[in-house]
Image (cartoon, rainbow, N blue to C red; front, side, top):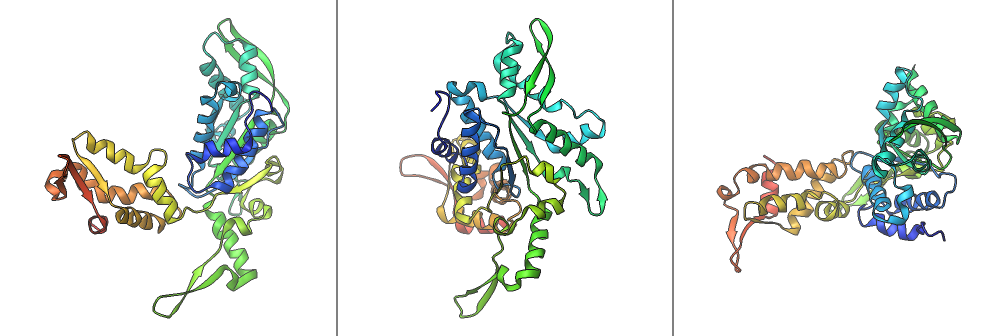
Length: 362
């Protein structure tokens, strides 16, 4: 193994410490990153997942991993771009070179102002580009062609085909033109594709009918029909073509990875332990006022259950639900009647199930 490389299991375990509930997707990401570190032709990834499912969290975890290990410094140049920006640049005819220019700027900031053109070039050639909201540059909207979306996809496709590109880099000695080989740049494109879910569900329902539902017995003896449709199980490339992803563009991705909807247990873990966890943030806030916050396990489960009722929001729904519960408490916890002394002399603010339920419904 190369001195600067990591095995897929090592990468997986590192990412899993930050990303909750997406093990299948993380395995695909781990393999792609491992190949990237070995200098193989990039195994570009196409991520599909609703808002709050963890797409951006996955990228941040990869970015942290690359920057935390000095052995991986040559592969730690990462840029995040919104697909809407690419579409805007495409509409003005300025999309060519924009991605490489962002990589060069990130490389120079990472390497320092004294970095040579050769070092910047090498960092660009081993960089990682994350394009968010890729679903926004579809080739058509309804029956109407979306010209800027087509051009934006074609612009990215040019880079992903491994062609040599001319790039001007800025060094301490002034601007210098270098020729960049793009075949080893790793591209990760991600989007929510909200309409895609309904599109595939409609297709599958027409063919399979009742198979997208399951009959679940209830405690009272009755039977409830629940939707059991999973996008990952039924998604085909033809569905993405129909959505507006150009076939030649999609062909440049080695894998289409569908993130799963987070379960209640996943959401509890995100609430307590995930990056920027809402509970950790609240704990820190109240400690600043010499109060210890305690949300009971039953209250946490209730918060997660309420968030799970908004599946298109994923983990983001946790903040909305928890925010409703805590809003008045953050303003005046002492007047809430929920502050009490503890046996060891501390002062505690307790949010139990009854409190969570009552305050979330206000």
